[in-house]
Amino acid sequence: MALVTTTKGEMDDSLLEKKEGFVDNDHEYTTWVEYWLAGELVHRSAHVSLKKNVSSAVEAASFN
Amino acid sequence: MANTQAMTTSFMGELLTGTHNFGTAPVRASGATDAFKAALYLVTATVNASTTAYSAVNEVSGAGYVAGGVAVTFGTPPTATNASATAGVAFVTPSASITYTSVTLATAFDAVLIYNSTQSDKAVSVHTFGSQTVTAGTFTLTMPTNNTTDALIRLATT
Image (cartoon, rainbow over all chains, first blue to last red; front, side, top):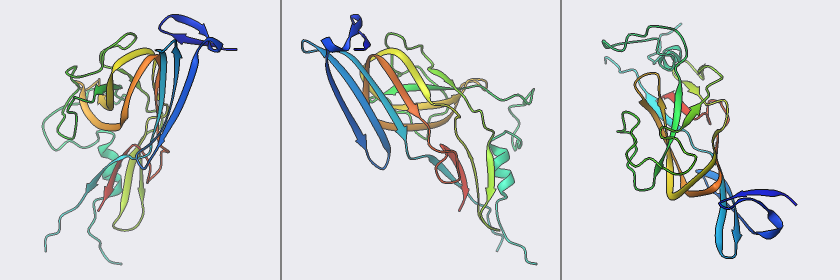
């Protein structure tokens, strides 16, 4: 038994339907968890791990 | 010995610390580290390489989210590393995850803008991810490893 923060306040997770998923590609690894109450989404959290950076190339010009 | 044309790696590292100024502004009054923040943007926003500064236009909104986003911690100074006489990399990565706690963001978002809140909110970088929403929950962005290939912000000689 654990308490989950929901749109209706703290709730016992045994009262809720839990759904989990993930996305794993070249760009990110993402996990998410949802808790539903009688067909209503009452909690959703997501955790994104970025895999790709932003990179800039720099160059020194040649005189010849 | 032979000379080799190259952008010096030390210069790239010093770009990340604001050491060189080829223009007329800004004049840095102190050597203190700037403060950086991370703001989330809706999928309908257009933040990209042409973004020059933080804007609240098309930023996410919702319970628990403060406009402008959250602080980003750069606990480790930029690193500049030579790979050869012609190649080097300068890089820096936030030292902690970027976390939005106890928020409800009902409209889908897919990008975070990191910007310098000390220097007039000037933009640093945009990072995208799959579309997300959050309901009475937490959104966390975990940083990649801070090294020459994976660091979040990376300058490299070609």
